[in-house]
Image (cartoon, rainbow, N blue to C red):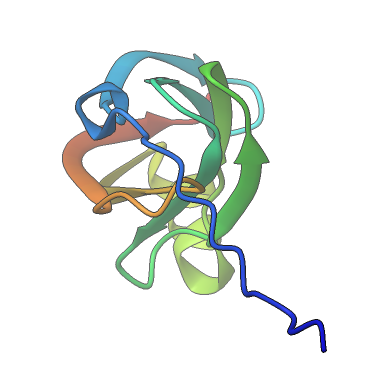
Length: 115
């Protein structure tokens, strides 16, 4: 009689390559928004979170650069429109698809909107 054997395959992933770097921030002063450029080492999901002031944003990315939208929300968008400036604290989370540990970076900057 022939018995079925279970086959298990393991893949070695170099988790030292699962890095997250925050690059430059490009402000769109006419709209009051910005784009934050990040650089990731492996494919995965990059999320942008923060306080109540900004909208959450998440996207799947491959290895390389990824642009994240930074947009104010609700009453803070109105405040930005009235005052012209809004200071936000952004948390960028990176979850590699390979099962490595997630990475987090925090950055604080000011959104500007021309009147």
